[in-house]
Image (cartoon, rainbow, N blue to C red):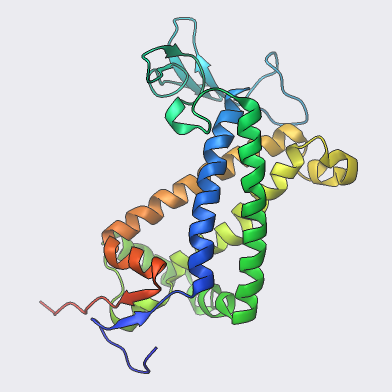
Length: 275
């Protein structure tokens, strides 16, 4: 990258390793989410503790009520979801009573065995890809240089300033656009060091086979059903992250942003004239 850059310059923004991991991770997470929803359809309830069955009290349930309406229940709160969750129609127009609809799952037709195959296959892609990315990012200094949050950035006044700038859709221009702001750093750190590792660990914690070689994993989360609940919560936290991420890409200029993640080249936004 040139020593002096300004708005309008075309510069290299993302390394090849970052771009490869970004798209590999996007595909892996999408497949795991959709296959995970099919697995959830086999027992659409979440519990805390070691055990969970139809007669046990679930803190979350997706299904249908006695009137045949779809519903989502979280604790005592119940929301009707007919047509979206619990009760919906397949492409042939048939009414189905499952938690998540056909278009949100892999496979689209009910198959717990196939969903598990998809889920476990891409779990390896996710885990090995994350490990390789973190190791390479340590070697090339990406984590230290781009994700590390400095002492000054931890100040509440600094964080609040970035929150206000985002709320006003005021994005960095010129050379400043090449650096992650503190909100981006916090979000990426959460995904890299909290959400994805915990998703992998809770996935292991749900497996009966884990008890044979590492029972401490299940015990760490307070039981297999607690691990399943945390796994589900983290999965939808990632969905929230991706929705915000996509919204920011659209607002910041989708062509320029997507090009930078495909080719690595990024055109610096021009500074806006005062007044």
